[in-house]
Length: 555
Image 1: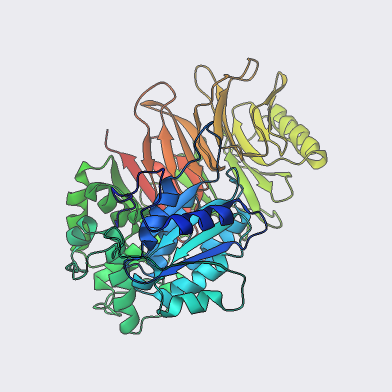
Image 2: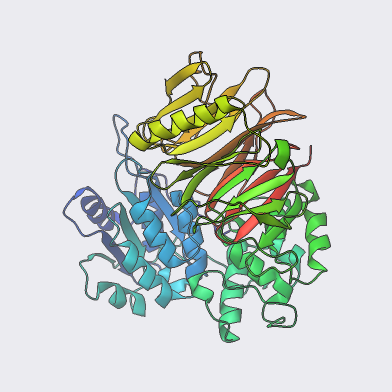
């Protein structure tokens, strides 16, 4: 990746010689609440523009330390609009498949750091797509939580374009040449073979992204800057799509552009390959990914035919009891499909009449499936086996309660139904009574219950914490894990290797935790994660709007 490390000339305290006046102007803009959200730093080549932004990224006031708004430095030299989108999204803790997604995610994200984030964007004039990036910057300037400092060389189109139809603070540097201010990327870097999976996994990922974007744009493929396109089938645009490698890269791009080992990058790219890809790609990627902690069992993507892609995923469930070996996959229309866990082949549909969207599902051990609709109300889908009357009375009592006090999350084990609410509490309805815990600050987004020797409940919330609790006992004071991003999905189960807890956060990270001790494994598929689940054998399921992936830990 292009380096975001300041030059040795930037000591974090003083601006580079010749830019002191510009530094004073920048600090004045930064501390003025009424100033425009966009600050443009211009100047001739060698005037110290890049050095000034690097200094600002590390500058801190002398004296008593205090919390400040995050300052995020992103070099734009050589970048496409899509590559810059993925880089900015990753640095700011959101997931974006395309530039428009980035603007929407930053405007609506529940994760709000202290103060406004300051984006420092260098070398706009050296970008691979300066016009598209200028448009993205203008849209970002309209997001209330973002302030931007953009460096663009005088005499290039970018400064005039950014000044058009908007308030902009301009810092114009006109000083002597500064050796620290030069192109941030090396011209003439060899382009990797875009059809070679090992080459793209070991090259600069932003260079690969730019090459895929600009190369396919010249070939006339649609949708390049709007995010991933439908994957081509064998024989369709085969050369331009590099055997399916480009479609997989575009699908998982934000994850692939992170700093990581080639083995981890190969693992992500392998999981993103569609079934129409060149058959030689999988063994090559699998060999490179052998050093990663994950083994791909199977993946199904939009456009796959053998077996078919099951559709967008909003909720997931791994069933036991009479439905052992069956996955439940719900989409945004309320349809719940049944899949065989071994290969995601179709196994029918869940017969239910729930109107609207399903926000959670919970397979019970007796084959009954409980559903939570988008109004927070409970629905019961009976299985084929007879059900004990006391279980019917339990679910009827929970349903009556949720009709008055809507739920936000749902789980079930033998003789118990667990519900989360918007105030941060978790309620365990059991045959022996009701137990409650105030577990989270803000809405509970996911709950899961494990029927082990000591049954326990896991819950996640918008506060980014995951907590464990045994009903009837005091909750554990320390969270199992905590991050500065809302939990979007969570599932726990008992496996032959002990209990496992899968967690997905709003910034795209999925983690597999071992509450009894052991290494935590993580994976980022690239697109926003909608749902996760753990199978009884310990495999991890990850559902997105266009993919369903099954991974197994290597150890």
